[in-house]
Amino acid sequence: MTRISRRALATRASKLALQAAVGVGGAMATRGATATAHAAPPAPTSCQKQATAPVKTGFEKLRDANYAPLKGHKVGVIANVASVDAALRSIVDCLHDAPSVQLHAVFGPEHGFRGSMREGFSEPETQDPQTGCTVYDIYAKSGDALKSILKKSGITLLMFDVQDTGSRFYTYIWTLFDCMAACAQLGLPLLVLDPALSSFVGRAPIALRHGMTVAELARLFNAAFMPALAGKAATLDVVRMEGWQRSMFFEDTGLTWCPPSPNMPSALTALVYPGTCLFEGTSFSVGRGTTMPFLYLGSAGVDGRIWAEQAAAAGCAGAAFRDVWFTPQVDPFKNTLLHGLHCAVMDRTVFDPVATGMTLLSTGRRLAGPAFWRGNGKTFDQLCGSRKIRPLLDHGADATALAATWQADLDRFRALRHTHLLY
Image (cartoon, rainbow, N blue to C red; front, side):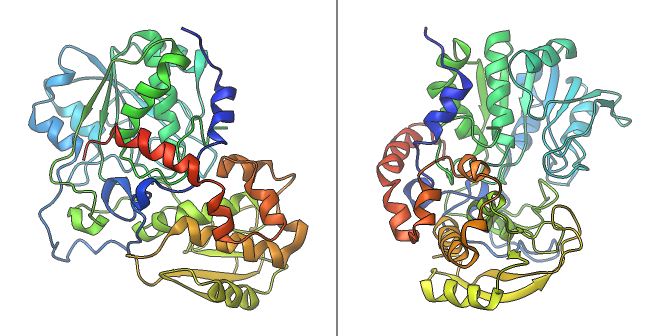
């Protein structure tokens, strides 16, 4: 079978839609594991009574089955700081203490297994003092480099249990993608547990706000891309959640929010992230190093009051804006006073993060001029998965005009997506 390169996949990715399929899709913030087109307020505190019975995650289902799929295997697990059971205990510790499980290795994605590193970094290879297992760094590893690590670990089965945000440029799903390709070529079985949270920022053509759980994405990746990329599909198994419905907001699950990365402190953050993270490709701050990452946006050279007024006048459903001053505590804007706006979600049932993000990009570009883009604009193109959007923004296109450019691709993705949904 003809193989296609990773570069070819990335090129195809630029041709797909930016928005979520069927208007339901997007962030773990919003409706449960797949995130949705609707917004969610911060998750309730643990002392608040939940409105519905708790969702049972894939890991809980696996434990209920006494880890049957793992028996006889030397198990490796891709996990991070948010990979916990219902009692907030690390699943790595749970696996280590289970008599029927041979936990052999741990693999850390971006930010590392313990979540101690900032964006774009990972923790070095080390030994976990709790379990004695080697923790391997697989962030941004692919191809022969990744296969070498997996072979070195000595595992006979790889398990994935990492929470996603429902956004194409959140790197955890591409760690899954690369590991799936490596497992297919090595003949390693891959088990994906569905958690209820639902370039290397876009390996394959999926929508920016895809609206799928990681298990659903694994099924799609395996069927649509692995045969061409790896020469064959991976031996894939998934453990579904129990009690989860696509209509749920995160707090409906009865689970406790555990930040999957340092700048994803709440479900609300993950809701707006699919739209405002695109500002990482601009000269503006996205609020990293403040208490409101991805909710605060700003620049030293823009009047935040005018920007907030123009964004409000554009009519973003379910959103409101106010001007704010803030000083990030991390690079690249460390200790720099910035003026910008606060994107506030007022009605999560109608809020659309991608449409809102496009409106903010359009109005921000008009105010900042050509200096709006970071470098030559390549980072922005990689994030949004298209070379069409930036030139249109340069010519003053609004969110409605931008959405019209990707509708046909979105329809095609919606049809592909539908065949791999589990819930």
